[in-house]
Amino acid sequence: MKPKPSTGYFTPQASRRQRVSTPVHSEANDNKLSNMSDSFFHNLMSCPVRRELILNIISSEKENILKYKQKLAQEEKRKQCNGSPLSKVQKKYVCESPSALLRRRALEQQGRQSPQSELSDVSKSNSESATSKSASPIQFDKILDQVVAYVEIRSNDNKDRSHGAKALMQLMGAVIRDQFTRDVTHVVFKDGSFTTYEKAKLMKVHLVSVLWIEACRTTNSRVSENKFSAVGTASYDHNVSVLCSDDQTMVPVAYQMIMCIDVPQDS
Image 1 (spheres, rainbow, N blue to C red):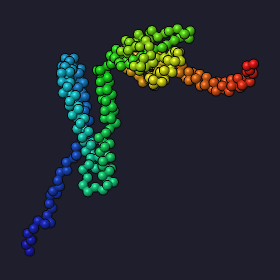
Image 2 (cartoon, one colour):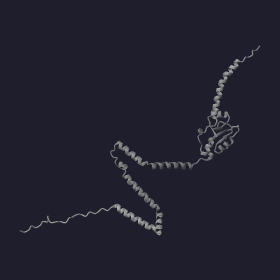
Image 3 (tube, one colour):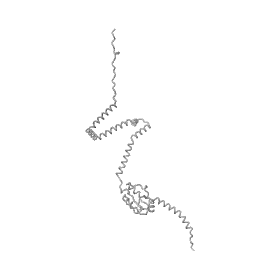
Image 4 (tube, rainbow, N blue to C red):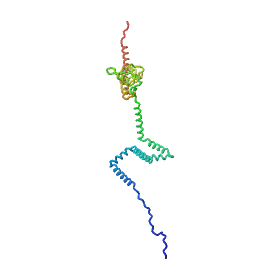
């Protein structure tokens, strides 16, 4: 019997296995590259001529290097923002519920107003106000402009001490009156006469102490008169009330004394 021709199904065939490429470890490559760059940089900097050339190049291209750093920082920030929950919320705002809409708006508001931006805005406003103030200072002879003053300052031994205050107020732009006239707007008072105090109260003018003049001089501006009331006004009010109370008690007593006196009758 002749053998049957082989169809090839039972003959051993070569295995057709694909070659599996071994994965290249990126970390190992990065380490090798970093080691090579470190060694290369060390070799460059060891030579004084090359080092000087490198420093010259860096100094000449300093602006471009800074721009490149800023560009890298912006790209990194953009990547972080794209992967942040805020960006996901911003993309999905179709058919939002009211609560989701409020949450998204709150996140957007927080992202826009960071603490650094708020601090920068505050510093900018402060610097602008400071520059505006420094750009237009008040002249010394205009501080007490439109002030008509009557000065009455006396010491404990009843001596007139108002000459210095008058001279200073005139330098600051005030008009000084030697007498208490109707156009007086301010009365600088200390241990003066009671009539001057009462007249100032009746005319409702500013009754201030010497400290008000000093405050205007030091701050280079017109300070509020309410903070510097005249010295001795409280004692005057107290004395007035005491005098009135004494009169109330003395009138009945005097009347009784008059009634008890025997009036001589005409013969």
